[in-house]
Image (cartoon, rainbow, N blue to C red):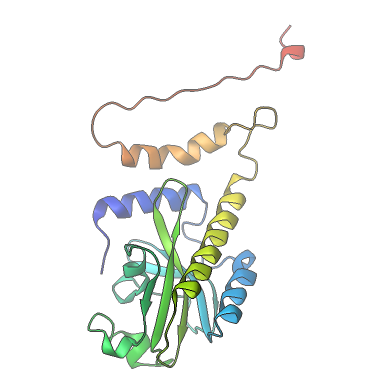
Length: 207
């Protein structure tokens, strides 16, 4: 399953703004990934980021590969789901029963994925837990996984915002504008777009 072109363009712009476009891994997320695995007693947990042709696992436990083809991505379904995507038994789901992760090693059977949604509403990937046996995942479990996904997004955005806020006003800086502009342009495909800039002067040095 490949996302529509408009979604791919928006996602690409957000990944660029977050400075994770092209990253093979991000060890800063490993603690949250491990926490997800521990919380749900899941042997496999990972942070998946969706690209145009590949999904990359920025952080993972129990998963031997660092990326897969986007066509084999279960997470591509999770980012368009209404809430957490839960598949109790992948072998019984016609969408996933022929997936290489199911038919080949590590022969996974259970999947739960919470979308990673940026502040602008664009889903860039998912925080996922998987198991080698069918499982249930109740509403409380889904809420907890969604909360952990929010923490992953917060960590990514905090990392991206480093050095991008004006220390006096707290407003986004010129560097943030350059990072955000591709995403803004990708979403403004029709009509006229307006931008407002705030210029801050250091008064003691303005003489």
